[in-house]
Image 1 (tube, rainbow, N blue to C red):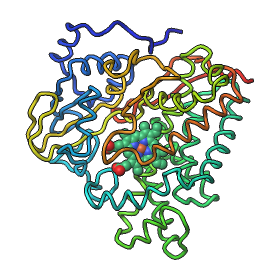
Image 2 (cartoon, rainbow, N blue to C red):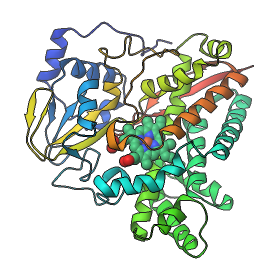
Image 3 (cartoon, helix red, strand yellow):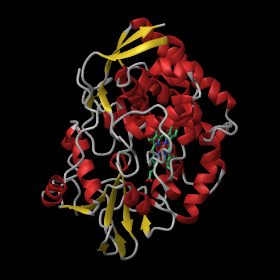
Image 4 (cartoon, rainbow, N blue to C red):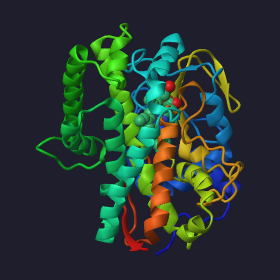
Length: 413
Ligand code: HEM
């Protein structure tokens, strides 16, 4: 099978110019279903000029940046941008997100700092030995089933299982409710158009929020040491604010992590002898984890709105301009990452923007890294090699670079 991730010829000035002259609606999710997106992102990153998308997928249009430098600057702590109107294509100063100023990822300033302080202990690894053990046990459970089966669609099995279980653990979902919640979560974030229990994905998401509403009521009368109880005990958050922030952790923990886990299998399959190298030198697991995040870049874009007139890559944009940073493009910027299409187990330095940059840098980064490190450790123990048995099928999404299907064969040790 050909490897679409092999390096292609460097972008010619002619192609970069053509990329500037014709601009599709970059919010169109169909653009991201094929590997053609990599060449498109590379051309825009090389040109390194803000690109305007006319109203379409977004009611008022938006600017885009692609190079590592431009994305890093737009997201930097001191940059004159806000997340409070929303952080996805579709939101801007004229159509703000109703969670703005209430949900961590779309809140700035002091309230953002306070929310981050409340949530951080649950997602950082510093006091999480039990969480590490939980992650290790879950990885072993999922992987043993997959290795026994031999041929699996990772995007439907291992990928989704682990994050859903970890998020339930963090949020304090009682064991009896887990199976149902994991199923609902998989349906809500699986990216499939099918139905589960007669529900569409968005109905499954609403069902989860209803479940959290009941959990909040239960925790009010019987608090525990989980995130829901901690958010309630702050005393300054309404029930709706607590729900918004549970939802933030639910989405943050599920939407991206499942695709980095699935993508880890994909990445390893592109490098002959990758698992043998990790077996011979387990110290490579640390650099391999970073490379999985860079290479898979599941968070595809983040949006900001300019709070004042601002210069972005040589162009002056007025206050109120929505600007989208395309993280996978930045993570394959050839000025920063030599042979960016290649998955290199020992890539160093690896200053990727997979977890964003600045004040909203991913709060679950340590947890995501811990999950991937556990996965690699168990893969090294149990699997000799990974072979794709069909081409990957990509999600139809402008927000998540992820897999609908990834069929593989696992050769057991
Ligand atoms: C924020 C990516 C895993 C929770 C972010 C942001 C990115 C990101 C790019 C910044 C958003 C922005 O700037 O607007 C990823 C990737 C992951 C991952 C690629 C896995 C490979 C997780 C996990 C959790 C989580 C496992 C929790 C269980 C959050 C939260 C925020 C966030 C709460 C908001 C932080 C803030 O606004 O201060 N993530 N994430 N993420 N992520 Fe993650």
